[in-house]
Image (cartoon, rainbow, N blue to C red; front, side, top):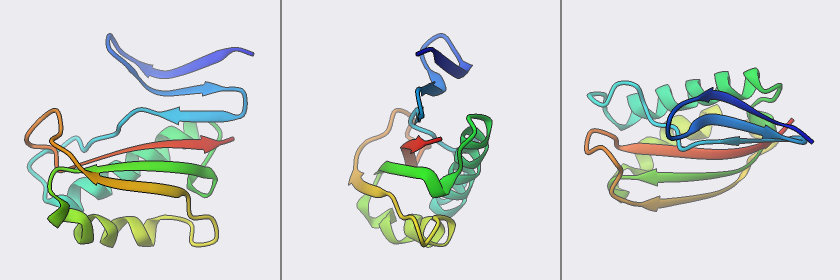
Length: 115
C-alpha cells in the first residue's frame, strides 16, 4: 500500500492516507485571536476540507483527540463540536486539558477517519 500525504511541511503533514484510513495532524485555528468557539469553528472547517481532499468526511471519523488549553473551555468547544459532528456517527473521543504549543491556541483537534 502507498502512503499519500496532504499539505506536507518540514515538520509534519496536515493529513496522511494509508489504505482506507486518513490520519489528521493536530489541527489548530489560523487565527489565535479568536475565542474558543471561533477557534473550534475554524478547526472543524479545516477538518472538513482535509477529509474531503482525502475522500472522506466527518461521518467517517473513527476517533478524535481534543486538547483544550484550559478545561473551562470544554463547554464552549462542545457548543461548536456537538452540532458539527454527524449525530448518527459520533466518533470515539477524548478531551483533555493541556498547554498547547502556542499560547494563542485554545483548542487542538486530531482525528483518524475511514475513507
